[in-house]
Image (cartoon, rainbow, N blue to C red):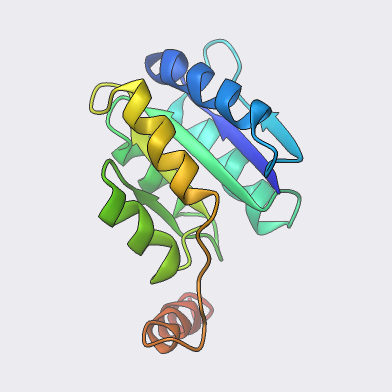
Length: 147
């Protein structure tokens, strides 16, 4: 699995923790860190979402202060679904139900050990398009294609 990761300055500490976890995980083939000094949360979120949309990476992790700004920004890229999750139930539902390719978290909201636990779960999750949420995800994609 190829994963992009990124954060502005207010997510850098947690981003570095998660990046180290991903680099050391056998399920991850490559980690692309899109962070740069002075990058804004919208800019890094757009970059990551564009990499996902183009198929250059399979998934992405974005970190900011709360995880909300990165999710809002990433969701502006057509074909991308980003979700903010700070608990196991939401992280699981984001992928299994809604096929979210981007997980967003907030450095001010979640401790690094718990964030690593979420990432560990997230790496194994998949969306089943034939499940009950499949038609709803299709409905979202259809609406998005008509703007």
